[in-house]
Amino acid sequence: MFSGVVSSSASQILRPLFGAIVLSVFLGACAADPETAARQPGEPEVSQPEQSGSDDWAQSDSEDFGEDLDDNDPLEVPNRMFFAFNEALDFAVIRPVAVTYRYIVPVGVRNTVRNFLRNLRTPVTLANDLLQGDLERAEITFTRFFINSTIGMLGLFDIAAESGFSYHEEDFGQTLGTYGAGEGFYLVLPILGPSSLRDGSGRIVDIFLDPLTYIAPQEFNLGRTATEGVDFRSRNIEELDDLKADSLDFYARIRSLYRQFRANEINNGATSDDAPGFSETSGQSTSSLE
Image 1 (spheres, rainbow, N blue to C red):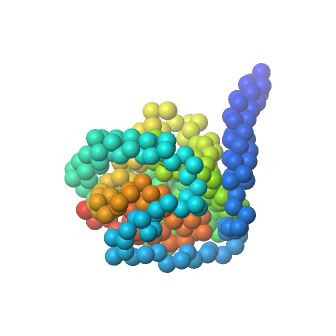
Image 2: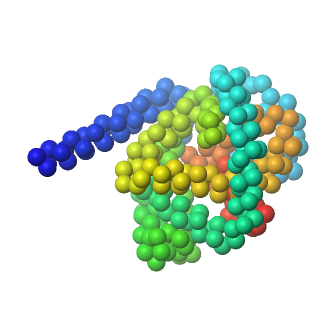
Image 3: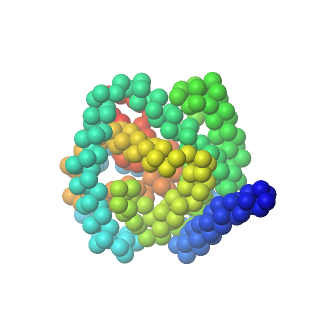
């Protein structure tokens, strides 16, 4: 009887996971761009074209981010509506909370919080490293998790980075990209922000790949997501303010930056310092957050 209950529970968990993976692969395949080949599993890293420096942000949006037949944004009208909603929410709630968090919490404590959150996400990164067939990065991920979960006191301290095992993050959207799946059309998700058909469906699979989905209370997972959002926003306050002030079309610029960032991630390239809001800064100053 007990084995029957276990089998039934496992079946209930695996069925939606398998369905989500199949759906994501199908959607990603439909969105694939036959003219663009992404990094294949096991291939060496591909360096990205050098992106414009910070002095180029003043260039006209009409030149760099204007109407383009390749924008692949058929849902631009609803996307802009959600973008406006997110902007209003950010102005009224998220940014003030992020500013307060950065002002009150010392930088060392903020780094500790980020280290802990990164460590919690390690199983998802490890699963995607393996799905991509990248055993070298999978070994680094596992080593980081072992070191930081033990010597690093459950991830509070990033001892692994000090030992030469640098941090990286993988998600199922990136995994689909390594197999040649195109991004599909651009999406702006309420609260979550920029995404795409491929990356949005990948988020669903990542939820099932995360062990905390099954073992942690829902309140804990919601709190973790909220904390990640506040920490992320707090590390880009000035950068996003400057970017918004300098943009004739903030929506179009964010769309372009998001696509550049995701292309770099799929190819395991160095994250551009000129894409605030979508990357993590290596320095932890009191005036610049993620």
